[in-house]
Image 1: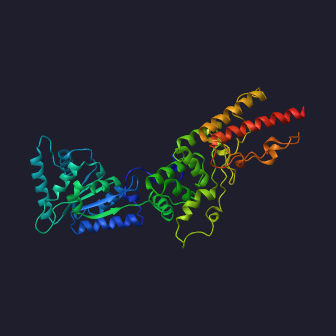
Image 2 (image 1 turned 90 degrees about the horizontal axis):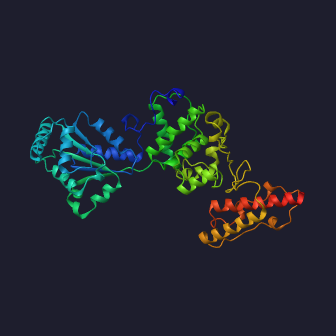
Image 3 (image 1 turned 60 degrees about the horizontal axis):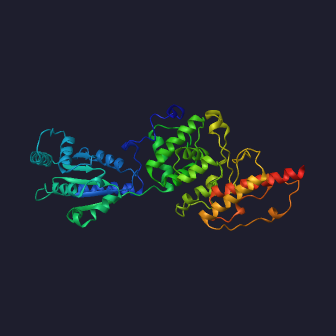
Length: 441
């Protein structure tokens, strides 16, 4: 467990909405302030929308803490229900036993609770999370709850929080009356690069970490690019990076460890690319470190942007090594290293081929090349070959097969899939090796 290895007092990247770990970006602070002052001003309906994983529930729990002494609150998250069940959930959360009670009795009980709260000078605030799941009829019932009021103030205030579908639902003509009663609309947006690093550091600090810098700046940038600034995705990637770093006994989480964690999560590639990466380990394009962090650096404002992307990673060794993973996981987990600046399409590092036994003869391979050409023509159209001049020259025994110019310039970019390029390149290598061997004999 990495808690002992990194000397954490608790899990820094848990999946529960603990308000102690809340870190507020500019939009989070704006949303929190809007909701708080809207409640203090006695507004009836307020909304909070954000995409999944943005920390809506964490922000609401933080707001509940702020209102603990000045308001009576209820928090509902079971929104796959009808109007009767929603009212039952509300009273149950308030400590009222509703078993065997009718809807009329529940309305009268809720009215009594509202009057009691108002008589003591406390507000009554109901939070409904995942409100995008509520049907139109249930939302209309929620609107009717706001009819509990006196001439001077609302007896109940309701905060609807949900995904962007909530805003789309409220925009329907059928819900015009509810939409008109919404006084404040708040929205959360993803973190920027300049907010991702402090967010990670904040969670580490709350968890009790007191050591030196744990994540390098390049690791922050890569985490931001992969997670798109969504806190839940940041937490998942940081958790996996720390787990891997503990297994390898690494006291610092650098770019190579984050890349390994991304690979293990298997969320950064499409299904076809995942298949290719397993079938042909290096048959897919390899991004250099500068290409990986360039989108993140571009999002920095001009006052904090470095003059070159290289400044972000100048102090790092970005070439992954496999010796440590081999010691911890065995040979089956070892993958060849990819150096920065490697050509987009390269063959396997160990020189092995994926095309049958070495006893294949040239006629058999020629037939395979013909079939591959026909298949490629059918699926991607007639390819445009750009054959280097070296390929048309006679081979001599001094030629090295590995030195042949079979890189990304064999075909034009965009006309072939990586798997097709890998097939043709390996077949050409096989034929040239046969010619070299024949001329030597």
